[in-house]
Length: 373
View 1 (cartoon, rainbow, N blue to C red):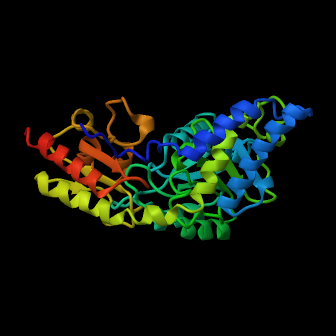
View 2: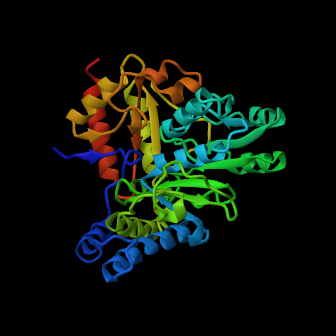
View 3: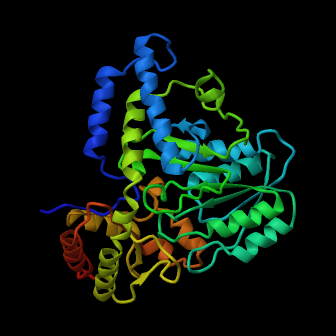
């Protein structure tokens, strides 16, 4: 059976260059990066190479890159830092956000650190920009949190417009850019903070970064040593850093390859809609990333379909990988006002190595699966 991987938004296959860089670091740079002797300096060199590579990708200064344990930690750090000193204030966000933003927002409100103003969501899957402007006009907004690209639907959010509005209102903006780095030319460099995860751009898991606007103070979430200037204490893994550096260098050249996936995505969507009566594309009316197809199949359940596709050799998902294994409807699709789609959708996410043959194989599998009902 030919196996087809169409779950690139969950994680990406690691590059050979990444595996080689990590293997070399494991042999040659296994020391503690904080140690001043030769073994530590070799490890520190890998860490600083990663910082420089991420800075080049994000078009910022290496001094403004804080290495983290991944995108989730970077999001937590950005949100909690904004409200760490108390004093209340408002956090503006939407229910489109990744759990590492939405659940932190809920926690900050429970803790009395912030009041969350949940803005409306348009049916096509973008935040309601007029409601964002209203929220900013209501006053006391300390931070606006906005994703760059929705992980489930691929819908591109109006980041530049929101940043401009927030600037006028004197509010900070955090952009969850995990699904954007390496996949688009716009890496939201006007934002105050941006999050990145290596494994979303052909690198290793458990390492990422928070990119910070020059001069912006970040309060640590964890307490401990002075690593990462005390912002993120704990020993940085030089092996993971070597993989991040290789992935970030590759990501600088990859947006064109991702853009070229649009015809394949369109062919996949057209084929799926032809096979299933009543099927529809989630977010079809919005600007979308060229590699994501989120399709609702009325009469089916998302877990049932994902399992059936897997048995036919096609890897897809029911939504965000962070929600996999649960029976909960998609909070993103529910926020878009489509409760039916929230329970019956499958996300197919293509990647740099996806071919026309892969799409044909996926459609053949879909024909088999969808003919059972």
